[in-house]
Image (cartoon, rainbow over all chains, first blue to last red; front, side, top):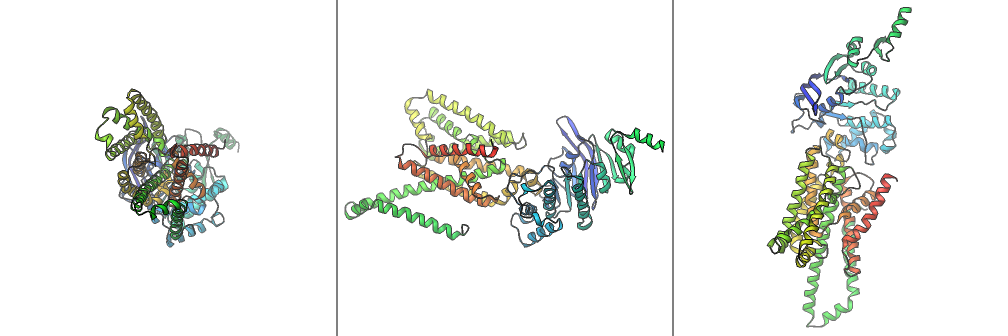
Length: 263
Length: 331
């Protein structure tokens, strides 16, 4: 369980995160959503200790993340949005970097078994020996996921993993994440833009607005017109498709209402 | 084959034998004549021993410079994620010249000028001190921005050079001569005492860098990945920069500025070996640095000491750097 207590962060005089108190439940996919500039990525960076919060405390399973004696790289794995490598690496080599917290660079048999297992799990055998600069966006994303998985952590944090992916690969990615939760017992935190994907695949959703937690709870409860309207300051229209609530947000709600009346 | 230790040992032995036999054959008449003359023989052996000693010191100094420059440049390039930047750009040579000029100008005949060891220690301390001050002021405030550090280093070195030449204009010719002899250090005139002093420092630095090869492999992935994989990136950068500044300061004070040597050695080794393992890059770039220095020194000695190694290295290094810039940016 990851708990945040009174997290406060500011850049200059601008408060980006104001007094955030959160609990991220175990064994679920938690989605962080919110409009641009709301502080999603800052919150992500604070939890993944890329930046330090100005005040407040973050505990992972009861351990403060800033405790220098704790090596959190075995507890929490982080994948950021931009992944540009200046090195010439093959997929296999990149994935094996994920074992560093355990192996400290010297791969033993157990590490290699783990890497092979994850390559199989994500069906990456065909591109195992390919250089990463020749991979497509979807393939690279999967290789990076494998790298995060071999790190063998309980928590995985992903910053907009669906960026640059088309819908087919996006859905595949989300299904993979669900598989990780169901089969490997991971706890996953994702920052997302697409509300529909978030509500369909994430069990728990945190909505941030102006640096504050606006909503926290199951996806089903988020998908209410009033809530979404006030988070994004726009007009939403929500329909139920196959038991999932889907929203449309093209400011077309007046037209839709008229159509409904006509029915 | 290249990886076995036996191969390296054998090749080093063969090259030494080759060198000795070439010397014996080319100087055969002189050697035989000297050894046959009973009056001359002891003197001759004594002279040979002296030459041998001087050469050994030279070779050791050469190896020290190669090791320090190759290692520190490799690490620096990993930290900056850039293949063209070298730590020499931080402006060590100008700080070196400024220290010497100031010393001679204000305390021309003190022991700091006359005693090479004292002079060396003072210069190195100053060079390391100034760079550490720069790290403290710039890196702490600007989130480990090494490029900014380099820019400021270049500005400071220009300023320092101007200050040094200003002092040199005010000087009398004798003092100016002293400065010239102090600052034009090269592989040819190396103090024996300094080499012995620097040797342990080199070994410590080399052991440190070699013990962290796997850390550098991970750091080459970039700060976010390194952080995620459990490396304290900011702290590691700081420690590395301290070691790098000590390494460059020591080399500059021992054999003079060798700005392009690191660039040549590290880039050629990265071209020969296209993987990321720092261990191999370290070893390869050390060997290439030694070879480049040796070739440079040979040319210098063949043309009768009319110039210093630095000139050759700068000449070829400059050309190579232009080639690299064109290649990397695909102009």
